Length: 336
Image 1 (cartoon, rainbow, N blue to C red):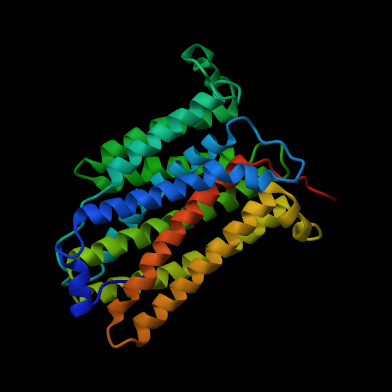
Image 2 (cartoon, one colour; image 1 turned 135 degrees about the vertical axis):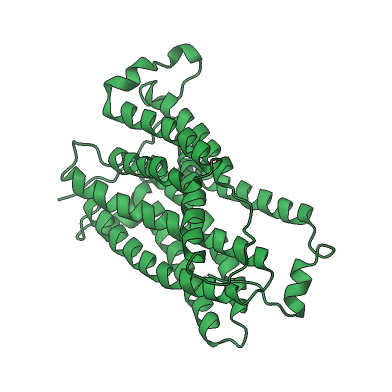
């Protein structure tokens, strides 16, 4: 959770001659590529030896869901951090350029492609003629897909308007749609599952997107003393978000895999293996967050917490990619 020191080391990091924008762009491109490889290459490894069959195009669907989740994180994180900065009197007026509109456009593209899969009977369409757009209105999944397709452009328009905070409403509609989609009416207590997913997805978006925008804001402030205060505010809220994420994640896992079978299913099913990978990544993120919090409290310069926080952002990106993969894999059998 963290930032750059206004020391000589920090000056070296911020020095354009030492760290050109092209270098940062290449680093971001590499990280995005690696994150994309997780859902694309993950299904064969997760399914190997389980005897389970994945739906057609599972890698592409996992990638699209990862993009959709990331598209939620960016604007919701920006709104969250902007609200935190208002609680800091005397903080610099400079703000990093918003990426919400671009994220919403990416979310719209992902939602549109996912809707085309639903419109083809959950098969990968190979031509426009296979896509039954009208059929989307006849099914629950189709209507939820249409809701997401429409919500992202509205959010993009709100992001470019004079009231960017209004995008919270269409983005909330996407979160609700995802929570409902993940729990069909045929499962036991679907509303309970949707409620857990709603809280889990909201907390995850605020945590990941909030940390990303906090670090961007700290970089924009160039070591101003308000940076440490903003980092502290974010850290306190992030602790609550992590607790809620853990609680809802455990409850959701027990609903999918009862406690008597969970240890077996974590290693013998694709869903369980991917869930285990996600748990390990989240545990690593929690350790990095704790490390940053210790630096924030005890280090002579609180802004040294920037280093572990930057690694935390990368790890959270991997968590988002694995989450996209998790939603595309077949659900485990609920053993009695």
